[in-house]
Length: 430
Image (cartoon, rainbow, N blue to C red):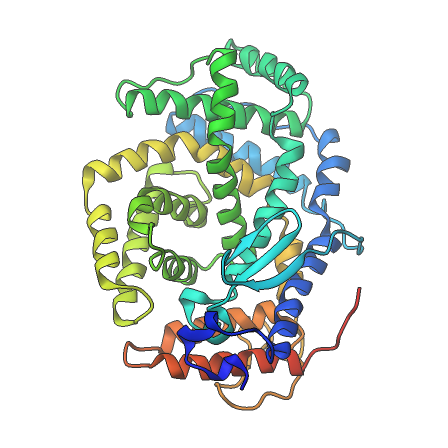
């Protein structure tokens, strides 16, 4: 008997023989995402177009009026990059893709893995295969940051000279890549100063000594990478829908055994991702407050579901209602907003989102609503976009599921989900 017919939580005790169709669907999901990113080639755009782009001026102060004008300057450069992406397929690495009992959802240089729980609970938000998108983005962002993060010694010295001159009143920068590198450097120094003072008497700007700044860039790389990944996950795969995004990521986070220890970190990543959608970054404090309220509202909506334990939701809501803790997050957001804006303006490629959701036969014209049948009806029309299909099913679960729905029901619907993707594929071996 195939393990998928066993009870959901026993699958780790069995071999994975008998799940060929499930595995084929996993490959199809990965394959679509890979083809889109290989076609658009953001890395090539950064190498080919960015060096010739005249960058915006540096932000000279963080008061509201100069900051708003600085955002306008970013938009002018962003408009010039509207056609920066390519649309010609290009070969690239094909990762080893598999379900893992040990790694869960994880991406490395050579592999992309999905949690074994997803074999029977793929439609359950806590184990949704949409998490695979997030892991793939870690590969993508590290590739982009290899060209834009001032790690190398020679690059560091050159960018540090620009950074020092910029804070001494010389705001000239030759090209867009150097501008982005200075923003990373400046943000790392600002975060180090912020944490030293916990937000008290923290002035802008100050020049961070070279040795300290090297340490800061290494220390904050992981945080910058995570923020970047969450911005792209929100913009590309969740189509900048803050309600869906918040419910989706928190359903997966709050089941983790260490979630309670990392609530501050997760809250900030959420705010960094969704805040851009309120006012496009011009009013930082209003953006922060709107995002926190949006987070609270959507997390409270999870209480009627059985995706996460209510005590974890209570812990998160306690943090959100703690003004002292929220004020520390607000200070951190204030420091990071220039970087968040630069990432949103220059390193999000709209063509990727368009291609991920391109599916002509199942989309209502102009509405973006996909006409997939309610589970578990047999599905015969070809699924052109597994990404669109997974997101559509995720929305339906959030809209209709209740705490009374048994895991067995989710397992049956998950099997249908895999069958629907696999049985309607046109196999592409490229």
